[in-house]
Image (tube, one colour):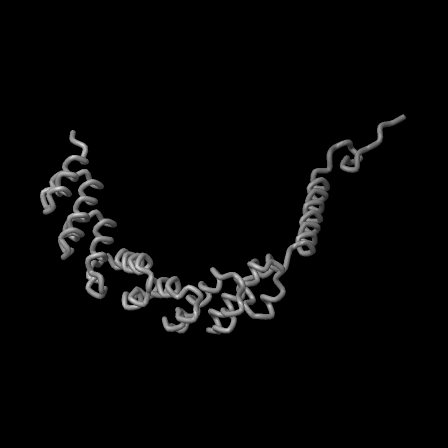
Length: 231
């Protein structure tokens, strides 16, 4: 019996290379089409919304998303675009609700919107940093958050002059001095005890014994000298 010829063999016994290439190409195209169909059938509404550019940020579009978290993220974007505070109030996740008020406040822009948020301080802080508005920092009730607000803006501006707008100037100078490890900023602090503490922190952080000489309180000065590593 003669050998059965391959589909890719010419009558002469040679391999038909063009035919092989065409067959491989058709197989690749078929595989890609099948993959596209499978992905279309299995992708979630959330992924479909994320993948589209621009995203269909409408209330109706958000309602089609299965994931509660992603659905509310979508509503935050709609609220920001439409400047709709009503949507912010309907959100179940508190973090997203606060973020929603902050985004709407920035979109308007009006920091007064933050007063309606569950955590007004966080909203004010976000607004103040984004707008570099230290006056909005003054609306923050929590002392720590208030300090971070001024510190964040000072980093952006690279300007310690913003402390002049703060009621508690000494704490503002101390925070910025420790951030930059700058003894000259410590020297601006009016309260002697606070100034000494600032200088101690900077001296220890920089391991610079020379800074200890500017400390007035004898106990603080001794502590400074004793805790700097000597070479």
